Image 1: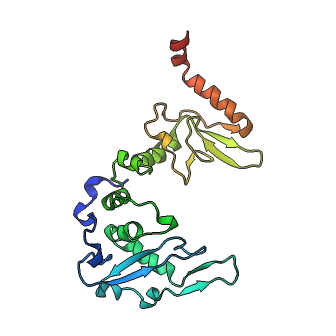
Image 2 (image 1 turned 135 degrees about the horizontal axis):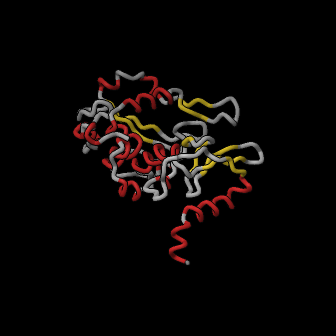
Image 3 (image 1 turned 45 degrees about the vertical axis):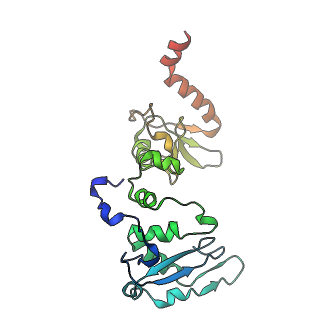
Length: 236
């Protein structure tokens, strides 16, 4: 997670006059306004259209052929369609300052894959990793704190076990809902259960292997065992 003190906030302010601002150098000037229509399956612009504004100097940093937006059709129905220079366009966008990327991916984005919009500064702050936890949850996003907790806690926590499935597939689950890859490695998907989990403790035993058919019973047993004193105080 990026630390707030390391960020120059003046360089990451949302653009106030996007119609006359270059997305790359962020200068207010005369700009080339390039519309990128949405395409269909096979394209990185599938159900996603947007715009990019570039001043003369920044336009010259690109290849003018990119902006002809020539459509390439696959040789068969399975290949779909795409713009000839999609990778080059998106690589250029990814090197732009975040205020320019915000305009491209957020404010000017439309289509089925761009129906979710954020306030401009919130989008930038989220990419910087400084949008507050509560604000992230308003957008239905994992907060930087939740992401950090999962990556730091899951691999060293006492509670996860390896799950072995009948077909040979393996994974790793915590009885409290977090999951990852076999061997207690974090997965591609973020789990928010690790954030502020009251049961977190560093591992002091070897991780167990549990069959998938036994896991539900193990989960009930493990939670009861862990909360034994609490249950005794409540019910005995």
